[in-house]
Image (cartoon, rainbow, N blue to C red; front, side, top):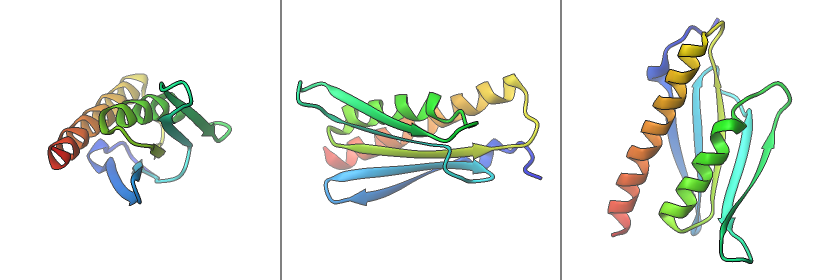
Length: 115
């Protein structure tokens, strides 16, 4: 049983050459969705997402990958899997806020390192 404990949500960075992979997990860690954002031929940041059936992480991973690619000016893949048993809609909203907050902190720190 994986009880609701959003304090265990983690953003892990894996540098891959110039690119970056961010792994976001919490509760029963797994891969629910993977989103890769990159500068396309048009010069705009684009994203491609793969999601596993029955998972909802793509609703967050896509926006996070786009944001990170724009802020860091590099290709970024976000692999995400967070699962807690029997959570409420309010707890889901809390998780989304926590993940966004942790990503903001990570991006601020990463931007300072590159400055």
